[in-house]
Length: 409
Image 1 (tube, one colour):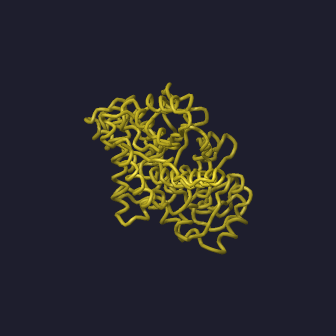
Image 2 (tube, rainbow, N blue to C red):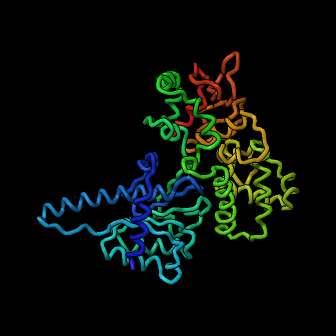
Image 3 (cartoon, rainbow, N blue to C red):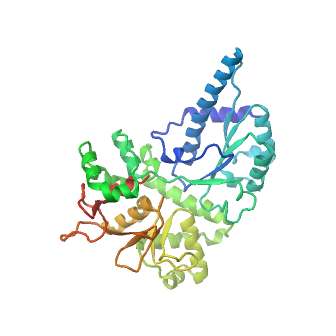
């Protein structure tokens, strides 16, 4: 029963070689028994699972060999780790609980699960696996639109959820240059940006790589021998057709409206949100339009900027594309660098910090206390508050190189 799955798993592991170790790998508490990895399409969730599976196998093999050495035996190590995809037709007539039981009986300890949403009653089955097999660790991939905690009584008390993002500029630089670069905290960037930038720029000039990253560095597919634009467009359509329509159970007849909405966002963001105009353009009510915008945000296509203390279902102050690679998918649009830099800043900063609009003169406030501006070019008279500046390699005072905010993860 399990042999075909081990053959698939062995092939995938042998042919998956992530070029760098993702920061999230060291942030997860792998001792937890039920872990969810959320992430938008195309950011490398499957490769992330397989990379962790390799690490688990090595650790389990070493532990087994030590046990055999102490017992003066030489029994082969059981298969303790397995990756499965729930889109396999096998699971149309066999339950996940049944499969997990067979795996545990043969010595299985860690089960990695992909395409979870393809399986009916997935949350209930995961809960049963968790409760029934006390020694089994389960790590599963979840679409960003799946509400694992908010509306899920089965999993909310037991699941630990983490978010996998696309490549940061730091990770992109590591891939392009081969130089190992450690992430920075916001406080380090604020107080030590000049000295750090000078030291790094003795080895490389980050600005030589920055524009390429903004266009095609967020998604791992830039490293593959295929058309990057075609691949990102494919992922965006999958976000609409699967992550939004299928998982949210929206009628397929509404897909053209959602595609039109996304095109409007591509053409206009960053921008305030004119709900009346957009509703007329896609022939939907204001309430439905707001719901669709929320779905695009949940699918990691949009970012919504709110005033402090405000949140959905209220109207955001401003809307951004989720990342600059997606923004550049708008055919024929000539981008103002300011728009791209704001989109990049939001995307990098909100991974670890709460970002809001503010009634002060600043453009953004982070965590309710750090006020920031974003500018494409350094102003002649300097900056009165911390400012992310797009066209500088090394900053001075409140002028901080934009590219450094890509080192937050």
